[in-house]
Length: 260
Image (cartoon, rainbow, N blue to C red; front, side, top):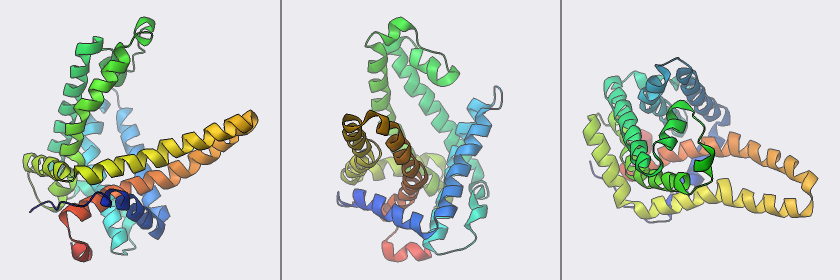
């Protein structure tokens, strides 16, 4: 299979079409997304094993949510049972992807340890608070910047990989390779997509809160709460749906989506 190269504007359309999928059945998509989160929270609560089990299950759980998005596009009515459907097909490959993701994430944070002596790795893995002297220095911010840079190729490799493994029967390494190449070929729409997500989730709320805060400090808290609810219950499910739309756009022609 070959990844299509799309125009930059498609990145914004992924968000728009993700919202259309959400509007088709808000209850279903919200159930799947919050079920995904709650499952990962529960796994992380398991002593010792949780920090390993949760990343292992992320690809299969994400495929469950994507199966729900595909069911919405097909106008199916039985999507509420799809949360754990990712474990039903190509489960072993998806678990291997989870293991590779865990190893890759640890490697990224290990890379940041060169800058901050492992403080960021300790915060992420064990919840250790950073020392006061580290907070007052530029080391932690530099470590975060290094981590973000190193995470980009990892995210590119995993963006489409779970769906390629589950739906296209690819082995783990091949799915990672195809995902990375597809993201590289479509860097323009991904830049627009990232800017759109940042604008909706951070820039626009920041502008509104800044104006409200300047006008009325007591009103600021109420507006902040009022804005957080649609972001949590509308935009987050829309974001998950946009992941599916990006896969469909890059690997499946629109006129084939209903039969894919």
